[in-house]
Amino acid sequence: DLFAGTADGEAELVFLCEEGIMAQAYSKRSRSPLWVAYELDPEQQRRCQGGRKSFVSDQRIPAEDRASVDAEVWGPQSNGDSWDRGHLAPSYSFSHDLSPDGAWEATYRMSNIAPQASKFN
Image 1 (cartoon, rainbow, N blue to C red):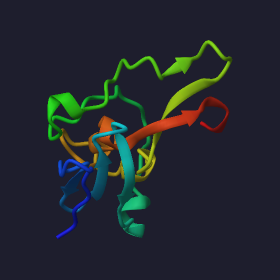
Image 2: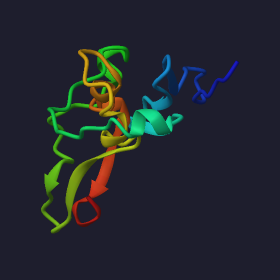
Image 3: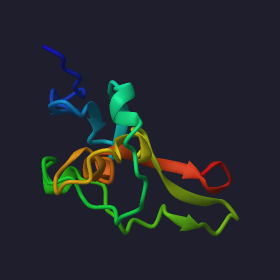
Image 4: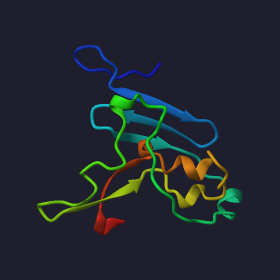
């Protein structure tokens, strides 16, 4: 079993598995993904369509540990930095499946999103 905890013994990580799509380790402390693993199928990649949709909270994570879609970290900051929502598992690579609750929609959950400098997006 995989486990990571804090000094008080509380689990710090949430491990998420979306069968056939991706596996993830999510940090409750930073409210962001630590890593995402996935396998791409060349045949599926030939059918990718792209597109954009709204980001959503990941309901699989307890409410008190979820990243907020509207957190103040996104967008321009007072110091001049600007942060976008960066996909760890890229949405385009999963756009072969645009079905409700399909692979593409899974990439828009906040558990797959980390702050990314705007100039790199």
